[in-house]
Each structure stands twice: as C-alpha cells, then as structure tokens.
Image (cartoon, rainbow, N blue to C red; front, side, top):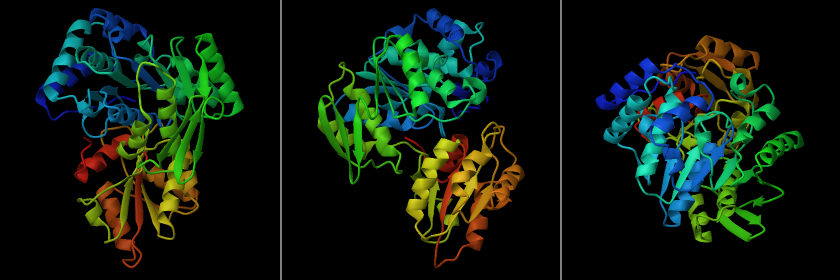
Length: 440
C-alpha cells in the first residue's frame, strides 16, 4: 500500500511531492536501493549510536515505547525511528527524545533526494535514509529502530551490528510480501538476526520457534526466548527473571493483557546487551511512563467523545490483523463488563476483515463500518455485510462522526456504551486529530 503522508508545513510537503514524483509509489522490499542511497550519503547507518532493532507483527511499537522509557529513565538519550505515523509524519523520527521539527525534516529529505533522485527509492527507503542522517549527526546514547515491513529485506536491515535484536508477537499479516504461513513470516522477521547480537523473542509454537532458530543460526546469532532464556510471571505485578536475576515492576500503564509481555520483551532486550547500563529502577519507571498512542488508548474529552452520552467510554486501537484483534477484544471485554460494546471499523483493502471481526462477534452489540480517508479501503457496505454474516448488527456510515451519532441515538443514557474505533492506524490518526489529541 502506498504511504499517503501529507504535511501542513509547505517546505516538508514540497519534498513529499518531489519524493512521490520520483519513487515507485508502493511498498517494495530489498536492500539494493537503500544500500546505494546510503552509500551516496556517506553511509550514515555505519555511524549510529548503539542500535536496538525490533521486528514483529504486533507489539513492536509498544516494545519500542518501553525501550525508550527505560533508557530515558536511566538518564540516557535515545533516537527512535518508528512507522507509520498517526497524525504528523514527524512522529516517526524522534531525535534524542524530541520529535523532528519541520525545518530539519525538510532539509534532510531534500538532501536525500538530491543525492539519490535517480535510484528509484521508495518512500520508506528515502525517509529511513533521512532518519539515519539525523541520528548520525546528533549525539545520543542509543538508537531504537523499528522494522517497517518484515525484516530480512526491510530497509532498516542495513544495520550490520546492532547491540541486540528483538521479535515481538507474530501473526499473519502482509502475506503478499512475507509468505502465506506463520513459519514463513517468522523466517522473514528473524532476518534481522546478526552475529554481533542476541536475538530476543517471545514464546512461539514449536514450528515457529524452529524457523526463527534456524534463520538465527544461519546468521550465527544466539536466541533467547520467553520461557527458556527469560521468564515472566504476571499477576498484580510483572516479575521478570533471567540468569542475571529478577526485576519486578508494576503492571504497565499501557492498557491490555498483552502489554506486560511487550514490557518483558523490552526488559529482556536491554538485559541481553552490554553497551547500555540500565538500573532496576528504570524498568519500574518504564512500566509507568511508556506511552504509545492508538493502542488501546482511552480518548479524553473532545469533540468525538462529546457526541456520546455522558459516562460513555471511547477507545481507539489501530489493530488490523487477527492476532491484534484477539488481544484487543480480550482487553475490551474485560473493561466493559456488562456495559454495551459497539465497534466503529475501517480497514485497508488488503486486510482480513473476517479475521479481525471474529474475536468480537460474541459480545459486541453493533458495528458501524466507515471508510479510511485517502487510502484504499474495504467499502463500508462490504464490511457491514461481512459483520452481518457473523451475526453482528452492522451498518455503513460516512465517517466516524456519523457512526458515533448513530450509536448515541440508540444508547440508553442509564447504561452508557463502551465504543471502540478499530481497524487501521491511518483511521486512528484521523480520530486523534478530530478529538484534539495530537501525539507528542
């Protein structure tokens, strides 16, 4: 899918327009173009602060947020590169703790495009090169790099010597790029393994773990997996244990039953490297401090929440595949209790609508299907039809605002609803902007 990034800053938008005129306009995998582009720029990826490289189908962004929180709680600084953004492209590039400003972003994009206008690099490759230039030039103690798509052939995989690599939860997504089975996808994600670093992973089924292990072995990398190399006990707190001892933290502020494992993965990554010294207190702080918008985020007062009856809850999650839906559904059902639950759903056309809906079908009262503006998406009528087949009362709506109005019109003020907007990070970004909650 093409990345339809826009900017309200004229200088940045001018470079985006230039980029679109030069790039192929769609996702492409492979390291040839990014390698050539970086070579013309002086190979900034070889001169970065210590890199922590994170892959996964779901949870890699949350893991990056926990990594950043722990590193900063230790009094250190970190550059962070993640994708996609929610509202502003600048969210993707955090330089020593602060989002990149428009002037620097425009200048870096221009520098990259000037150097490689004939290479035919993709949007993601150009912006990755821009991020690496920024990270090379500004001092920091660490770089946290999130894989964009897959791992083995992702543009970020030019990083040759990270201090540690990690793989979060795995699931079926992007099959046209990564393969039709979870084992094939796992092999692509494990392609970030390097002989210089431990590969830290979650607990996977035996066939998946075997595939990850074989790819890591080919790269001469060691694997430390949840349940063997490190352990978690989750109750009223999180108890992490490895061969070096025990770390105990409170439950993460990030909502959902899946977040303690993401926190555990971040702790394990930091405990399986030697370049950064992180005290136990920093891990406890990370559980409390980490923020990652649009991942089971409860929206505060704003124009969208105001459309619902007093006492309603409005939640937002950018989950868009079956594995994410399973985790989000469990969190939502536990939160709602006996209150009525309604979904507002918008999905990109290449996503599995039925797989996303199945975990919710048992208890959700209604579904309002909406478009995802400026992106190729499932027609709301088609989403509603898919939901109907699962027994959900579903309707098509023109936008999130009108969907909330329908839910409000049918709600019982004495039992206000819990509403979740779901299905796309691009949709989630529009929701945050509409409710006046810009990611910082």
